[in-house]
Image (spheres, rainbow, N blue to C red):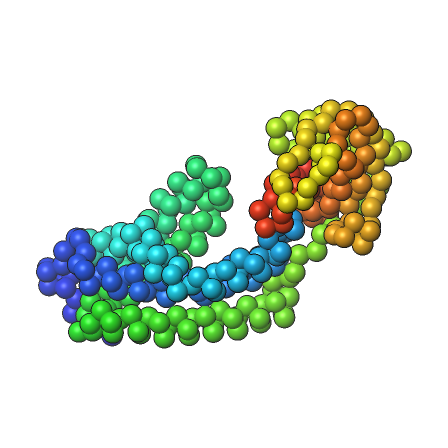
Length: 306
């Protein structure tokens, strides 16, 4: 493959990047975005979307419509954050350490992936292991590709059309793999739990100190609990916070036009009756309500207390 006689071994490698490296990195980084986005969308079927965004269908449609504009931007973003730092690290390792150049290009993305994972965990509480693994996986192909393209006489346009063909091939492979995974049950579609009255009874906690106590007899107590305001307009995200007592009862999803859940009725000026839907899993159940437009509403989730 031409990896043996490398510029790194000849000592002519720069620890920066040339314009050709930048162009190749952007093309190769953007080429894998459609396949990666498709896999993320397919994998989302196994997670609870809480009724937000119509299951991701609208987001997927918008992505397809604006893909020609988004791909170069996303590819360039990954280029500066992940691919080119990996290329520089691979060249530095090739100068200082023994081993084939392709090996250093293969493992180099782990370092910027660790940095991205650490920052994401600190700033947004993203899971460190998942973020590092995904970032490293996204960095491998473009980093190897830049090292490979450097040894060819291709013009920038030649890199871009080859990347476009590769993008189509990756998308087809991702689509086939996703279909196979769903058909074989490797990726199972999410199903909300079926909760009994006994499982619902108890204390539920939400953000900003919200508490909902459900008693087995149908009595309810609320502290700082979000509720639908009077004259509720589903196009708006407004809700009120209520302290008070009232009643609750299980409600069939067909009656409410959504999932199974409970209908909560609080006395006084605590707004209208609010349907809280079942979410989470049987072992870790949740109650949630979405105020406003499903594509951009305000989501509130309650977790079962200890």
